[in-house]
Image 1 (tube, helix red, strand yellow):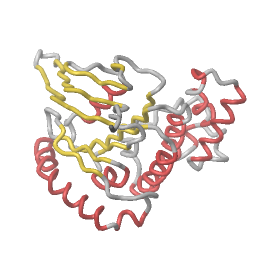
Image 2 (cartoon, one colour; image 1 turned 60 degrees about the vertical axis):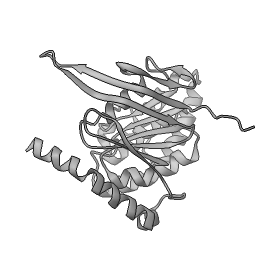
Image 3 (cartoon, helix red, strand yellow; image 1 turned 30 degrees about the horizontal axis):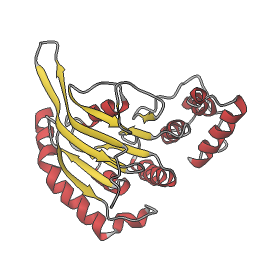
Image 4 (cartoon, helix red, strand yellow; image 1 turned 45 degrees about the horizontal axis):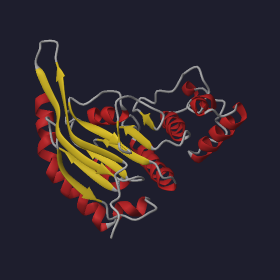
Length: 266
């Protein structure tokens, strides 16, 4: 008899409603259901306003659902904790701390000694190719290097779940592609579960084990695409016939949503 594997993360009938200052209700999410196994890389893809970041905030514990529940290892998520770390688009580094001290900061809660924190921080900065920049302040390095440091800080505490909210959105195209490959390499080396929010179709398909495509508000799961790409993910992956075909298919699926979004914002 086979043993049923319980999901690492379960999003069960989740809905989220916001009230505006005028008293109107905005349904951000409705009837969202998703089971994620430990170590999976999930991309959340969809147009602005479809609830991707809202769902990420619910998983992080920054907010609570209006209906349903987010469950991690069988326990309902109601507040942030150290088993889940977040990488934001705007880096969120402490400007007065060196890159080394920024990465060390998240390790204090684990009870590590000063020397242990320093060793782990140096190791993770090296893994994101920032060896030699440990003593630099955030304003002394490029945007891509800041985001590398932010990723190192989020991964250093060895979280169960790594949440990434459009972390590459502010970067130039070349740096973005290079960091996609770095993220793929780093996350495939460990066993943490990754939830990655993005607007980029090619980015979602390149990185994920499964791409969760969301509909416009109220946000629902429209479809889930399981990746056929192997590892490592690199430049050759972008010319794989399955990759090209899937990116084109998702573009045709989402194009009406993007066109509607552009028209509404014009």
